[in-house]
Image (cartoon, rainbow, N blue to C red):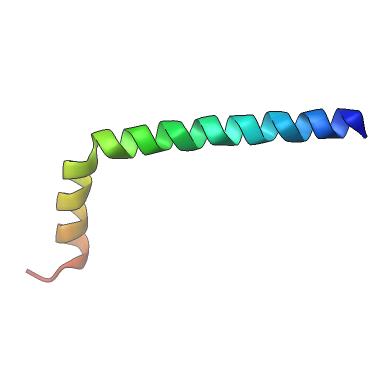
Length: 44
């Protein structure tokens, strides 16, 4: 029981770190992403 709980905590910590990293990458690339979404989804 304790072993699976520690694995669960480890997975949650890894998931949080990945989400934070992804958020930072998206935030740094925001102007590019806005241009991409405008070209992809907005009819010009």
